[in-house]
Every structure is written in C-alpha cells, then in structure tokens.
Length: 270
Image (tube, rainbow, N blue to C red; front, top):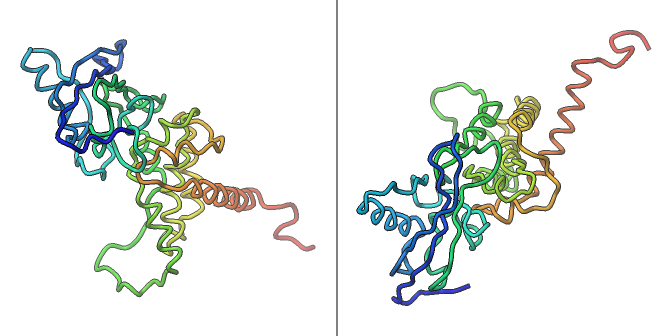
C-alpha cells in the first residue's frame, strides 16, 4: 500500500455513484481530484471536489458525515469495493489520501443492501438499525441518582467484553461486506453488551428474541460464518459475539417454548 507521507501531492480519478433520488436510476460519474495533499482525509478530498463543482454551478456530491473522528459511523462509503476503504480498523473519515497512489482510479459507492436504500448519491437510509435497537436494545431501570460504582460488581472479563461490544458504532460496514447483507455482527454486539452486565439480565431473553425477529423482518440476510463482517468493521468487533448471541437466542427460544406451551402433564401429578 502506498504511503505518501511526504509533501508530494497526488491526483486521482474518482468514479462516484450519482443518484438524484431513491426512485430514480443512478450511474457512476467520473471526476478529477487534482493535487490532493496526501495528508487530507478522504472526506476532505470530497469537500474539495464539491467546492469545484459548486464553482461550476453543478450539483455537489451528497455524502453523509458528522463527527469526522471515527465515532458516529455516518461517513460509511464503499471505496474500491471495500467498506470504509483499503485500511483496517478505521472509518471512511479516518482514511487518508496517502493510502492511494498518484493516478489511481477510485470507485466510490454507497453501501449496498436492500434494508439500506439509497437516499441520494452516497447517502443511504440506515434507520433499519434504529428499528432493531428500538426492538430491545435498552434496559428498564429507575431514573434518579446513579448508583455507586461498586453497587453491582461485574467481573473484569465480562466488563471488558461488554466494552468491546459497546464499541460498535452502527455504521453498517458488516452488512455491506456480507454477501448475504447479514446484520448479525451489529445485532450480536448490541445484544451482548447488555447480556454481559447485571442491568441487562431481567430482559435478556425477550431482548434477543425481539431484536433477532426485527432483524429478520427488515430483510437482512442470514449469516454463513465467513466473517467478512468482522474484517470490515472499523471497530474490529469480534465475530465471537455472533456465537454468543446464537447461544442466548437458542436458550431464550427454549425457555419461551416451555413458557408459552407447558410440557404435557405439567402442573399435575406425575
């Protein structure tokens, strides 16, 4: 991979997906990004391209962004067929032009998945993730003053795992990388971060059942354990959380089956 850490500027050709609206067809359009400082981020480069388009009274390229610090996940782009670009463990906003060579042709597209419809150009609607969260990614607790830090002891290993799962920023790279558009890595991270903590235990079963059901309802595909998801994740969320969620789901389904349909003879004499 090229490292243009020196001051030598580079010029690249961009093939960018342009789509005026969700109900209109899109196509790849070529743009030139000339004399890019190798230390500018990919989004800063797009800003420069947009400034040039606006000077020519052309419609700027629509792309989503917010924090530009790798925290919010809204900057998600498919760069040369890879979610967030060629480097590992970073979001699009943390991808720098030094990752590319002078003269490169770079294809930039939105994440492709049926539950992530294109809004305009490179902007997609990821509200499907919000609906999965709303289905069970919360705990019911009393409001008021916070408890003392040691009021609910949590084993160090569990606390570390919960923090690892909570690092998920919900960008959707796992869905974009998966050939089945599966959301299992995202859902398993959101399920696991609560299932590992005492506060998440009262609703543990209904949470995993509801979130998985909502994921299926929204049209995300099945997981076939090829782990493109964890490889593309900017926060390097482990696919081990998928196995953890599968165990929780099976256990919750078993308990729900006996709760809803008691076994024959239950409640009576042996």
